[in-house]
Length: 153
Image 1: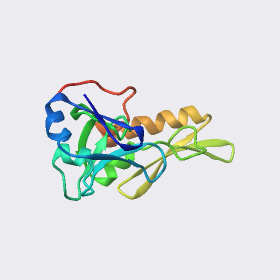
Image 2 (image 1 turned 90 degrees about the vertical axis):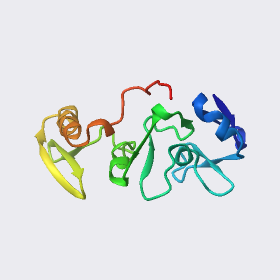
Image 3 (image 1 turned 180 degrees about the vertical axis):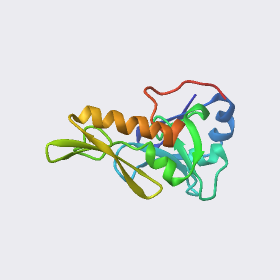
């Protein structure tokens, strides 16, 4: 179901949350990085936190990266470290976890504040594949999905 926001934006929510959310005035707010929007009310509460009833240091993550897709199947609770796994690559970087080192590509991963080298490879793709294999072991379900999931309440 859709909830109209300011700035011509629309939030998508599940039918089971629609009645509760439609009683509140929601505003579209541009993300700090400028890539998209999220919804918040006049008290500063974010719609995704309101739905998941989270008001502490835990993070509510949008699995598909769309801050206006507030369906429960697209929301999960975690911490800041887990949420960083689901972010987009750094501008100018084609494949995450791979960087050029002399004539080879180094695969690396950051985990719990430390960087770990995964070896050196002939191609960027090979280095990225090594990164993905390690990332799946370390982060599991927090890895970005290949396509947005669908679901009901």
